[in-house]
Image (cartoon, rainbow, N blue to C red; front, side, top):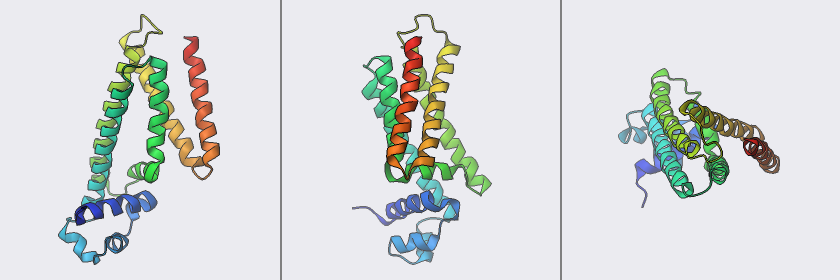
Length: 195
């Protein structure tokens, strides 16, 4: 059974995804069937609730990424890249995660924004290091140096970021978004096959 603190964090996730930092504490309290002042018996304030929701989502994404990289480690590089691309994009389609992550960038409180950015920066470095492993095991280029590996990994992550931005813009038209994502992948795949 989920405890009240976890219910509050889950509600905060939902409201933060919808409203960002301007989320309503009274709406969160209403969601979890308590009075607004009772929120503060579980958390010191709004920033702590939001930070714990962000921390929990970052931990969830770490776990997800580790599984994706592990599950794809024995596949050919092109197949790994395709699976990583589509699996990561799919992750952000669930539970309004993409909007949640976008709102992390827009936090008004500078202290909370800095703490949250640190979590996200560490996560992105983790993602980059794993992508460098994928590109380092790339059999398409026998003499790839460290700089090229990092450049390829960064470009791949930038492509994912661009796909997520497109997803954010096209989210109401799922068919259009999926078609666009397929075009992004197809163009990338044509480029890597030429190498």
